Image (cartoon, rainbow, N blue to C red; front, side):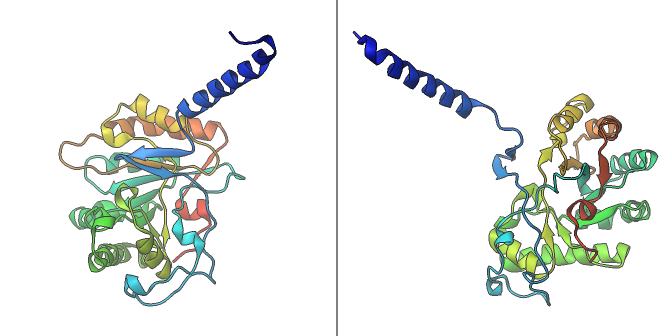
Length: 277
């Protein structure tokens, strides 16, 4: 039997334990995200400065040293002090969904960032040309949508440089933003990209549109998680059997809702203050 003078401390311990369990069991929303069973921490980090970047010709990954703490992180969001949000589209281009997305962006007067895959650029050059002519930004999404941590150093560099060369044919310059497929990349690869004056940009709002969701589901996944500085991940290209109708159907709703709430939709370089290449 518990003695009366022990009742208060005993009750306090029970309450604290219950509170801890409740906190632990709460779902995470803005502190992290899941994609392909990989957990990434969504955080804003300082952009590398001129002093921390090691410019120059491509060098072996093994010769790039940890010159800046910034390169141990991936940029996933912009400043929260301005009501700006970036729409980004991976796996571009294709000839089924990319043109529809471009039509919507043009009708809404919005500029976005397309992370393009090299072999898709070769397959649909006219669509890439339209992306550029419409004023959108191109970023490097590798040549074959490779899972970068599984590549040796030479293969990794070829994935980046081959796609850089393709993008340069359309824009006149190589891009300085890279998004690794699946969000997967090693610290050594991040450091090498930094040595080439490139920034690794992932996201902190995932539409999950690649799952073939409805427009309502895609819109909810975006609008329930955005905040100033958000980088939204959607897709504008897919493989055989893939369906991005949800992306196309959700996009007008997403744009109209964000604009009505006073957000400005900008490109990744604008959001992050990344200088032109």
